[in-house]
Length: 239
Image (cartoon, rainbow, N blue to C red; front, side, top):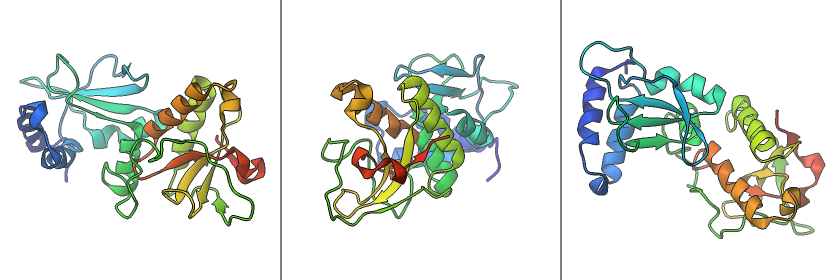
């Protein structure tokens, strides 16, 4: 499919005309199909901080007449290297809220799996752990497979973005990560972080908030958990 596709731009315009309350899974699938290569415009500044505290590269349906085209596939490498999401507006004046917002994790999924939903063979981990508990303990004698995440699972540039967030925004000086496969966890494959409430002065709420924030950076099929009892030697320092 060619980049800067005006046919897909027209498809987006029709989709954005659909009332938000009637947008269903079929609408979302049509959006995903059109938005990657649709010709859009950007702004000055191109990146703004969203109300959720994360940075977004702004795109919008273009005005009538000549314009400088942008599209998600065109800016994908840049936003992934920079740690940005993408916000798509329905008009170049940015009146109202974005029609759709893509997290960094959505864009990472597009890069890794050619879709925004993540690994087609993986279980959807959604945005939080099913039981609402972020921190786990490894029981004595339990067999757990531990290793560094493969480049194809968590690229180096995504690790850099995660490391920068944990150092700068969360105040974790030496953030560490591992890939853990443990049948006792749900789901069994997790990105494990060497974090606990103790890293936040015992503040359980802040710890949980940081763990939730980390999901913004990951595809929805990448589950995560804090496993401080795994042992420091099992973790790799995030760049």
